[in-house]
Image (cartoon, rainbow, N blue to C red):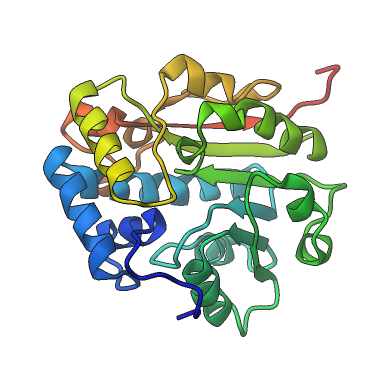
Length: 269
């Protein structure tokens, strides 16, 4: 564990790891995750549905011919990491993971030691130039070929004051035509009281990560400049489900996190 980590302050990356059944978390993270489950029943199921969406999105992107992935907010490694999914289909695929959490980065470095075409960078998603201009990006990503930008369960940690719409536009403008954006985002369109209670609980936990749920229209706006692929921006359990583990029989749980994938097409297209 990096010396700088304060184990008395919860991390949402580690709380998410706990909800997924991971072991890289502390008591304070587990308390927050368990409180979230009490305030918003089904939180662990929602986390797993979102993780399943990530795997389906990666496989979809591989089917479109994409062979390089920029996973921003990659989190603590767990089952079904992007390179694990991608390399089952295309061993030549290249993956750059980005996260600001020191534990997520430390574990990713250990996991990727023997993997030549995947690497992790510690950086803040709000500084796109440092990410896109990093030595890791220059080594792994060819900006003359399509790149898949993944921002899964990340942008709701940015307040409106950080203007996530402008941030996505900055990344979009740096990507070549034929690239894709895949993202998922917590919404308050369902169970508003419960998500409000969970948001307040996180705020009171002293975590530096603060939740900003958004409406469907606000999340669709994040795809401005891209062409959204079918079935559009939908509940993550409803985006190309392929089996029982991908979807819930509870409509609210399916729709509690919106997800979508979109392509950057040439201006003349």
